[in-house]
Image 1 (cartoon, rainbow, N blue to C red):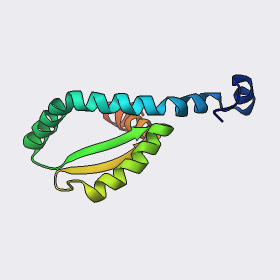
Image 2 (image 1 turned 90 degrees about the vertical axis):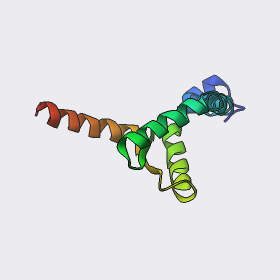
Image 3 (image 1 turned 90 degrees about the horizontal axis):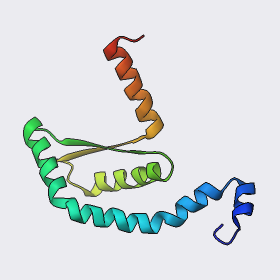
Length: 112
């Protein structure tokens, strides 16, 4: 895929996916750097939620495409190897999340 021209990729309907895959290594490095830079803030935020609600923090991995794939990969691993007393991890694709939120809003606001 990476050796094909943009015209070839366009004809295959693969130009967007190929570009997305090509940028992944840089994005992962950037995400890791962002996490390292904000780790203390994230920890403080999670501890505040834990203390306020006195129950495990529910974390939803969501996204579409490769982001959904990351959630599908990370959530089971972290569930198995992470701190299950502090965190409940779920994965929910973006379309499913949007449908559920939309249904909840409709019920809450009595739009239906």
